[in-house]
Figure 1 (cartoon, rainbow, N blue to C red):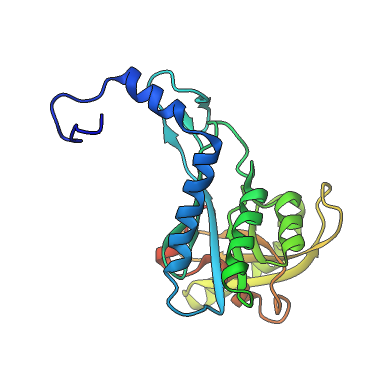
Figure 2: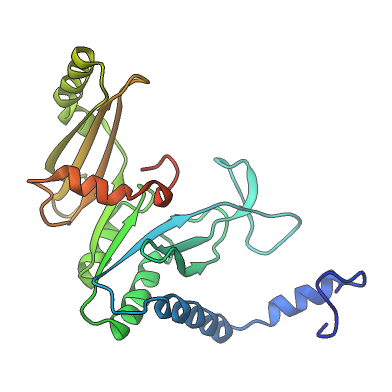
Length: 250
């Protein structure tokens, strides 16, 4: 294998590649994780005041009979569902993990955050760590691990009937202002909210938009300071600049 070029005609056989892949140990994977994290941390030439970690999952289509593939009804394919954690300040990947195709988005994400937080603070003890993710991650597990690690977080929150009822007046106000001005309206409602599965109320910001294309409502859960007096800043920080936005979930 070592003396064959990637673009050579006589390539390695599938059984050989399978044996190579299965020879990788847990210790090897941990060393690879450490090496990727080292590259991410080395990208900072001076100690940063803030590091923003964006958590995402993505579908990885599978072909054949690979181990741990599953059929995912939403994507309509056999696949894996890897997790990636990237840094908004450097555009670098800080951590990536392979998972089976129908796992919950949060599978292992709490341990991933614990690992990254420990490595970051070993290098930069005074840095503020901000975590952002869409509604697939928004739930008690991720809220609690962020609070445990003293991380600033903002997670997408799926709209439900209670949140829609709470923001109905604000949405009507946005529609009225759009009709009067012909200009896109973007209004925000900060409130304390507790879902049935939560152990306590949490800070939530609802965004109501009324553009020409029709109304739109989104919500986030956050522990960011200043959320009550400046909810617009909370949401703008969550979505980030256009090149850092993730799909339509936000």
